[in-house]
Amino acid sequence: MEDLDVSLGDGTTKIFLNPCADLDGLRPELANFLQFLRNGRPVDEFTERLVEEVETVKNNKWLEFEYKSFYAKQQDVYEEGKEEGIIQTVKRLKGTLETAAQELAAQCGMSPEEALETARKYW
Image (cartoon, rainbow, N blue to C red; front, side):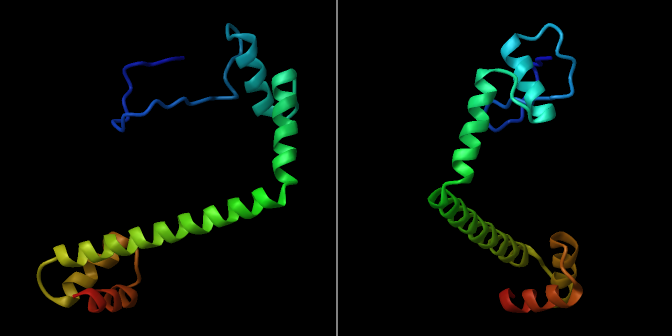
């Protein structure tokens, strides 16, 4: 089913695949791909090539290193963004240090002690 009226507001095109959907009426290539997603077994030349490529990548130590490095960098970026968000939250809060800590705990999912320590750090 295609719904052109749904907009996620980020300027990108998204495709959601439901491998459990009814395959009747789909192009054979798409039906084969969805069947492959369902059970993991290749059913045509394209899905056989997918399996081969996945195996090639899995066995490539350089790609494994690159992926792990990329993942670590993404985690660093995430942590930096999280910290920046906390800093901005603390700066935006009004009132006492204790009030700021309570808000941090509520908004950022911190324990009261962690929130108070963080609020003191950026207050």
